[in-house]
Image 1: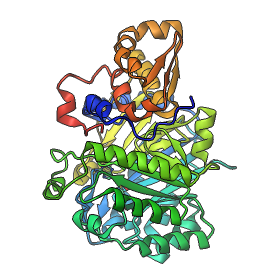
Image 2: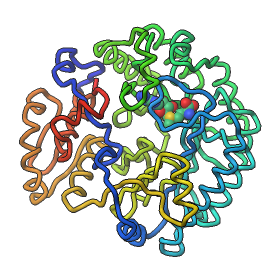
Image 3: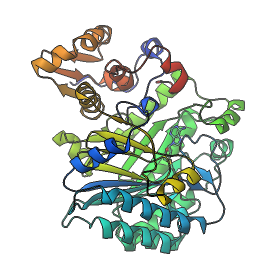
Image 4: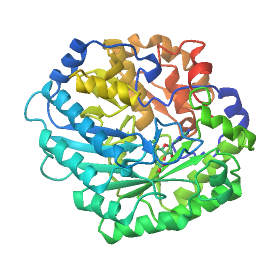
Amino acid sequence: MTQCVNTPDPALVARYRTRAPRYTSYPTAPQFRPVTDAELRGGLARGDGPISVYVHVPFCVRRCHYCGCHVEIQGNRDIGDVYVDDLLAEARLWRAGMKDGRGLGQLALGGGTPTFLKPAALRRLYAGLTELWPRVPGEGVELAIEVDPRTVKPEDLDNIVDIGFTRVNLGVQDVDETVLQAVNRPQPFELVEAAVRRLRDNGLDDVGVDLVYGLPMQTAESFQRTLDAVASVKPTRIALFQYAHVPWLKPAQKLLERYPRPDSEARTAMWGQARRELGAAGYVEIGMDHFAVPGDSLVQAREEGTLQRNFEGYTTHGGLDLLGLGVSAIGYFGGVYAQNRKEREAWRADVAAGRFPTERGWVLGEDDQLRRRVIMEIFCNGRTELSAAEAAQLQEPLARLGPMVADGMLVVEADAVQVTPLGRFFLRNICAVFDRYLEEDAPTRRYSETA
Ligand SMILES: C[S@@+](CC[C@H](N)C(=O)[O-])C[C@H]1O[C@@H](n2cnc3c(N)ncnc32)[C@H](O)[C@@H]1O
């Protein structure tokens, strides 16, 4: 495919504009239902080999009004010490249900704000986890942590490097003062520069940046300043999320409705602007919303066709069983999704009583597994290959792709579905066709707009 599509035709975008999941899981979290202790134990016991661990640290000192994540506003960092005790107690519960001898292949800390934990607490958490699952020897283990440049202290950054984290992700979102003020996140860009410098001076080069487009007060000009500023610190990865406005789930987002927000056409243009500018700066586009420098492991994984997708976005270790620790965290092991309780006291009470703190989840059947594979491959590689039997099983959704094929978004071959460069903008629409649980009315109730 040599066709270069930076910005799709607005009329086409308008025609396909709907509400659809971002498919960080399949089935998606709103479908999850209660799972039994036996189902969880079955999934846990099935697994072998290294595991990937995601730890959710929900605390933030101030609420960003756009935020769609599960957070708890807290001023007292001492709470983090208790939280680490509870996380390690939870980790021991899961460990007891697993086969012996499994190691840690990947660790990611997200939030909220993982650096809300004091340096000693973070160190204790890492030591406790690696006692249960020793770090797999050799190259390739990824230890990643999200950092908020506004609140992180130099000693937190030094501690992160000293523990052995290999990747840091900075929440930047935007650099324009008017935008940042509107979303309640004042953040001088010097703080971002200082954090990057400190990490690199300590020898940690892999620094990624999160941006959001579609925020209130953003314009093409302000967004250009953001892209330029971010490029100046040379992140190895850039995640560019489209703002998901879901005030029925996140009431603080209602506060943003008093400001002008870029409409669908302006948002699509921003996406094109980012593709053009970041492409010119040497970044490779990954999947739906990520960019990375050519030597990055995400680019390598994309080239090798091993890129995966989970709740953290795109990842190189998606083949491993994923254990989610902490409030609201989601794991996926042995064909079972498990989402923890969101309310901290309820989560704690379960852990204290020796029960898995799982609120809901899903045990994947054979049809779920096939659709999950197809959706993840389309999201990651823009292509999925199907045996004759699989194509027969998916006959109905494959037939429903007809209008998208006619509009040039994908090509359906006898044994494969191939997304075109234009189709990359419509990945959520394409994958929704394979989602057997997306009832007619669900999109309006639960998901953000596709464009
Ligand atoms: C789990 S959040 C935690 C970020 C971190 N605490 C920080 O410094 O902001 C991870 C990322 O999700 C993205 N995000 C949060 N809310 C969003 C929304 N409503 N729509 C799109 N992206 C969002 C932001 O880019 C954010 O950096």
